[in-house]
Length: 521
Image (cartoon, rainbow, N blue to C red; front, side, top):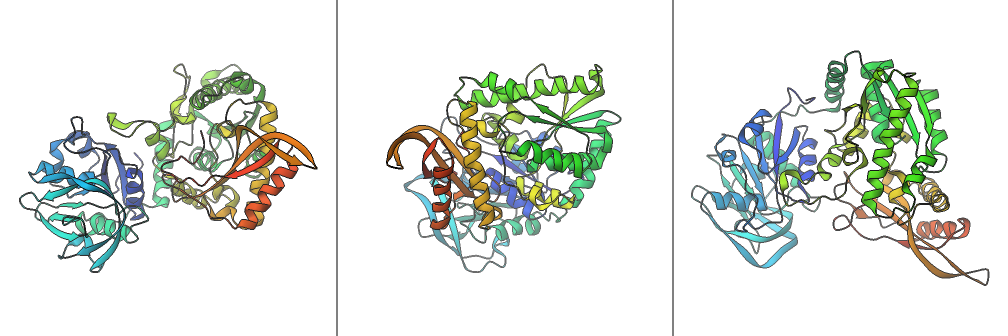
């Protein structure tokens, strides 16, 4: 692991939609965090040599028949433990306290009153704005615990057993709606767990390069380059580690943005002098996708075909000696890994498979190399900047691996790809010229399988509807729709309807994540 030698915090995942956000906040404290299934064994937890353990929230009730419970050893390892929401209820239940269903679900903003001196609240004052999201609450404290903070409806909003190093919060310190929550987590990590701040992007690069060299030896590595942030940073990192042992293959699957193929070849082939092979596989992909409308099937088909195209490209590069390339590198990120697996059978359901995690064929000829799989998106950007990649690459908005396939709802045809490419170009151009492009997480168009009546030049039209999706986010785990200026929205809509043949209506998606996802498919 590239985090060898670093202080670590283990987070046990009980199915909260915010588990990944907890991990991100801990890393913002410059401490490495790792998410494990709620039922991880004591041996597995200990193997990471953590300085402390966090029990995440979750949708279950501690008394439910199939409620997820941690390994009991979690409380006997001599490590500080912080229970958040469901985590604190588990702790109270385990030590003989009482948890009951609230008469009304507590959801949203609240005011926390800190009544007792507690290391968690060091320097945070007597009151705090917090965010609740729970249906059960602790109603009787276990022996050895005391309340250190309360809200109007929760007398035990924060509890501690300082002697044993156990702490519990009935609210969510990790979300942005708890403005000083990061400071609270810093207190847990640095003051209570005594974890030094030793996780930086510079150390990550050095250690990852060293690990890649050991892993790969004299073998050659093939990387699928899309031009997006993840694959571009993976390419730069691998190039730094192994130089000419890396060959990048840029596959045009026919689902790229307009002019993308030319831009990527110019940037990496001409500017960075990285070995680059261009493969136009448009026909292969579109043939396989013909008539497929199910989003998961689209992702699987694209993921599978992507690797088969790779295998063909490999054979051609090696002139029949397929053994030249032993490794296939991918820009898999930590959220990809987490979202693609319902960890340990816990309540977090499969959200969607990612083409670079869930769609690989069983007969693949490569060993996988995923140098970024420990990182969140904003950490990847920091690595890119540290490696000297230009702003237009590092700060580029995320683009899905399956490309426009997951933004064309329904059937994928050449004509529908053209329509979306043209609409998408207008969105990007207007966002950039207005200065909004780098301020938001993602801004794109979605082509809907919906036709509606319109009037253009006194004539009735019956054309496609296009949805605009523009969101702000810290790490893609949660997101909110952007309140763009009306004149900018009007300009984008007007240009799309007037300039793109095949679209006569634009709508704006005002759904946050959760409950929606950022992409439509």
